[in-house]
Amino acid sequence: MGERFAGSQAATRAVRAACAVAPPAAALAHIGPAASWLPGPRRRWLPGLAGRGSPCHVALTFDDGPDPVSTPRFLDALDALGVRATFFVLGENVVRHPAQAREVVARGHELAVHGWTHDRPWLPAPARDARALARAAEVVADVSGRWPYWYRPPYGILTSGRWAAARRTGLRPVLWTAWGRDWTREATAASVRATVAADLRGGGTVLLHDAGHASAPGSRRAALGALPGIVADCRTARLTVGPLAEHGVAGAPPSRP
Ligand SMILES: [Zn+2]
Image 1: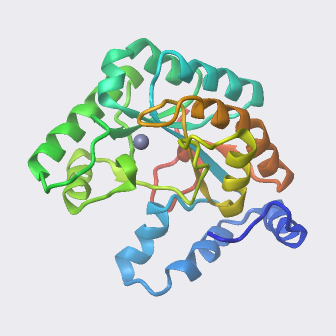
Image 2: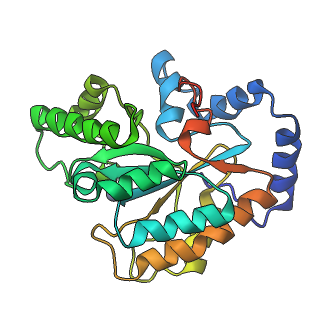
């Protein structure tokens, strides 16, 4: 975090140079320094938890859907941009709007698990966490035809109980490296684009929202309006934008069509 690629010609040149060849070793060099203080297993997994992937790729992710009104707008915008993304959905939204969830998959995007409801883990509840996560994974598998791989807890709060529940459910936790603060009342397309750009670099994972859980009215418009600019910023820096499935996170299975 903290390195701007937008506005920094030197940084852009460096990314272009690295991404022109894209050797697998570059990914290791990219994640190595940030994790070098960690003991063995964590060194391997924590960069992945942040969503660090190939230095030539940016993962685009959306949380809180599906929503029958706002999600189709994001799908249309992504089609127009020629970009696919990962949608972290809530189980309760999938059972309310199964057709919308199937449409996300039909348009070539990846479905992932955000939880059953968008609750805060005020008190430890490992058994309830495990049941809720398994139920959410099952409804996602029902609409997508495959067991999901990624799990992002609501608010990014990964308690030990939720971590254990994810392991038991066969899900891999992943957070983000850059967000757009698109849920706030003050958010505009320009502010979301600039906020993402401030923390984004090759290998990063971007968090936006395609639905409005507890977010300000109109905040979806800010994220939607920011999308073309965010994708353009990435492409200017020669970064490919896509789903987590194609992000090259260490230890993740190869992308499946
Ligand atoms: Zn959320």
